[in-house]
Image 1: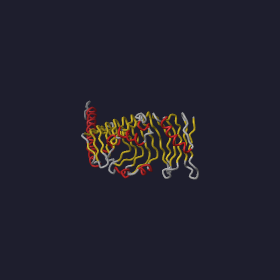
Image 2 (image 1 turned 60 degrees about the vertical axis):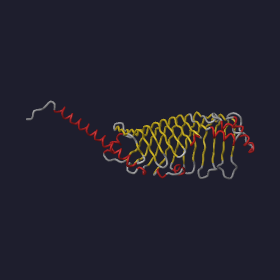
Image 3 (image 1 turned 180 degrees about the horizontal axis):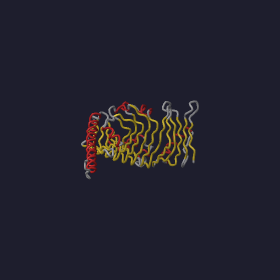
Image 4 (image 1 turned 30 degrees about the horizontal axis):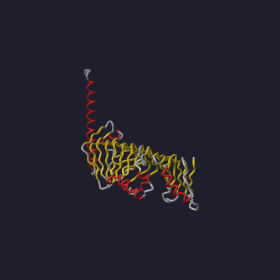
Length: 325
């Protein structure tokens, strides 16, 4: 009869723990090797100085990222890719598909021809079906973007577009997105779009303002630096087969504060309906527009007003109405 050893359960437990620890580090090792190999093979234009993987969090952090191809150059001080931890472990045992991922990037700069984009913080959430062995055949169904302290600059600093914070969401079904090379193709794949921008601002260079003052001397508001400083800009778009519904429009700039909606038809661009409630309009713009509108027996009233434009009936004259509130 074998004698029971009191330490036997402890030894068995420690052995199991050791095996699990070894398996964990083996999984971490192979996951890192697989991800590094996958990035190097699938994204030859991508380079970085270091990659750290946290399996428990489902995170991959890349330092000093650089992406360069013929169309665009992108730099980021740091970027973190986050996926479901379970899908990271699935990759170790042979899975080749992801259902969603999130990217958090800091100090991002993108350069394309004469445009430069700089973002202090960028967060992107993407949902769909991503095939790791054939990434171009993946399907995207939802993208959510959040930007903080964004700046877009044109060549020679002729125009700057700034935003304090921006949130955008798009829903659709984007297949073979590498071949989407036109705005029309992109719109056809889009179902809904939402945008909310806080403290947007457009800054014209001194050169542009001088040219405008010569070409349109009566439109002094175009050269006023305060004209295009805003508090917010938001809207939502819904796409059907033949119409684009623009809803929940809200914009607040020093020259214009308004809310409203519109219905457009891409196939019939001259047929539309626009409804705007204008609570504030620059006196300079009001005066300039009234000079033109008087030729059509129209007039923008003082104070707040309702604006309606309807050109959807091809056999009737366009409906244009300015109604005081």
